[in-house]
Length: 157
Image (tube, rainbow, N blue to C red; front, top):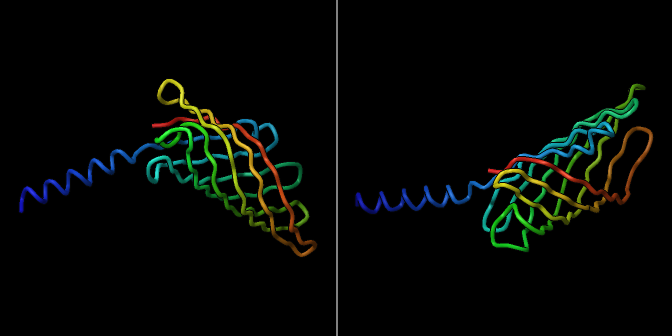
């Protein structure tokens, strides 16, 4: 019984350790346009990750925040966080301006890209996305498609 318990603990511990590949990253290009975007990506299983992210927007008289999630499938290797990837994305944005107008938007879409890890820890992620955006305020409704490209830099461990 004692050996069985120790074996189960060892299996659980080693499976948990092997799933510890993770990264934090931010998009430095967005900062030039008043958008701060950072995320945390962690391994779910071989060659699959989940990213949760936050966004702060402050351009002209409009400011707001956003949250998002992305599930990635890595195609060019059996390990997560490296190589070509694609997957679905979803998020929510809340914006307001200096004139007491506010709006909320949901988005659902997909992303494709390539991620490198250099010198074991330095991360570069390039990506392109397309999404459907839906939302409204007191003054207007939005149902539109949106495209995006970006580069994120980060640290993986």
